[in-house]
Length: 244
Image 1 (tube, rainbow, N blue to C red):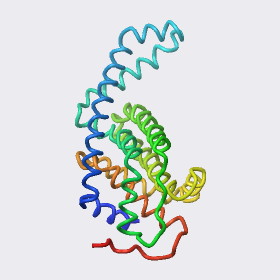
Image 2: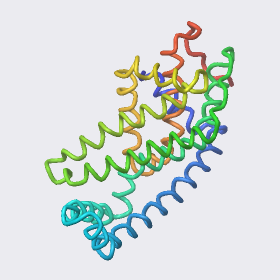
Image 3: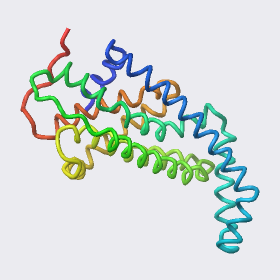
Image 4: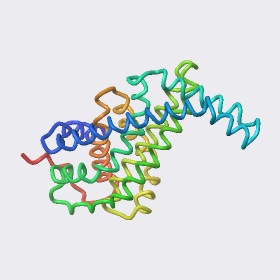
């Protein structure tokens, strides 16, 4: 696993990856801006006419949930762009990965597995949908963990472990779906859930590093392509050194 992580890191700044890196960074920054605008709009709505509308529609029971959500959003925005981006990056990179996972995987296969049959591109709609699902779950985890940030860092632990599970799941399944049907990819992930979760911790650690985390789609995809090769029971051969 460590060897796979090192190979993924070593490939990030190679010429074929640089083009993908620039595109993914541009999309990530754009998504961060959009999410920030939406969170700010949602906070304003919840503290104004939105809270009145919810209480009128649902009843007074909605008062405290709305109050808590508004408080969580206020903290999220109050953390500032720099700190907030750290917690929002799992959601952002999940979306970005849906657009570029196949392009990244192809480079990994070409460099390290030239003798193996290449994988088939995952339909863009399916890849983006998987990214959207994980991104929404990541945002939910973010909002749930925020109140616990004040309890001796418990929120950071919750967020890290949940991020490891979600990103490990997404990147592994995207890598596996290049070779097998989506149902089989999910089954393979479940059969190796422990290893995939630990692998997800590598990605969660990577995405927690400011600035560097903009390259998470490249690292996560490349890393999980290697992990899938080792877990799928394919050709029994050692990893080839990259072609020069």
